[in-house]
Image (cartoon, rainbow, N blue to C red; front, side, top):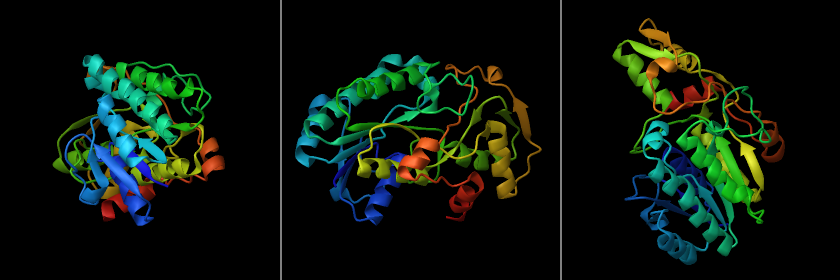
Length: 296
């Protein structure tokens, strides 16, 4: 089975590449710009602008993948709020190009999506819960999902996830766990929100699930996250406790006080029953993932 990966320079893309290499599975890693992942052989890498339909079709014709794992997206929620046109171009239009190309070569197509498709009114969301996006970014992911869910094809999956963390090479963005450790180590006073609840996801677990879903050619929506939901403030204090860092510089604050451009759902978290039952997904608890992250 040949797998094409978009967004291979990102954290999740790098983890997928590493696991496929370890399993000796053929793949083509693609991203905008040069290959920034030293673990990815240049022979298995191709620059790809996913918003260019001709480029997309050319790559699919040449590689003829059996499955596609589409991780590439603009995920900066506040940036999307003030750059709605570009957000739609990359997150929605490009997904349509990729999905059409995948259908043409009869490849299974997996789209990475987000807990932000929900409004956060209840938390512990299942795959059948109704979406209600609160931001431009969230709307773009709902629209991207709809390209698949409204298609007559059944050769697709939507993989929703929450706050992905881990360590990668030459990443363009950090993640909340690494940021928390660095910020706490600086000793500076930190104002951390205590009214948003998430289930942080170990990137290696998510990569495993993406590959598993592709290999099984599963159809439908799958929720893939960490098994524990807690506030952002508690997340930061857990990182501090594990790393032996002082928490006296931490202050609780509210989302409203941050004056962020985009509205966030107050409480998400996933019901993982379907993923446990159908793909045997067994995510690592937060503390165990910290052990792996900080012992590397």
